[in-house]
Image (tube, one colour):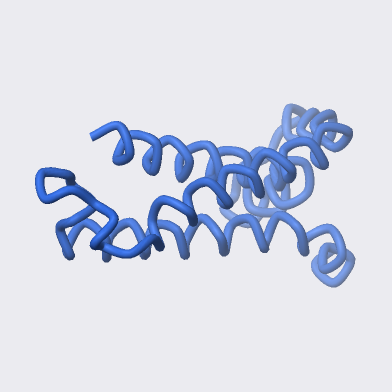
Length: 116
């Protein structure tokens, strides 16, 4: 059960870090695109100096999550959640979504000039 908690927390930390890493650049664009505006959106650029740290935390969380999720099913005990095929599929899908968020966070500052 401790391994299951570790996988969940790694995915959660990775996803949150990816969202925070892209908040300075992607956040204002998304908010303006959906019709939200205000002076407070400009304050999101204060997160830009922290972006590299958020990306590092994201990558470390993804490494730990990968090690837990993509290990052989035989490494799980019979009473553990990771031995269930349905749970493993869900975790793998969530891992793919979080990995895509991290890739967007890495690449968006280079693609941002095309959108502004």
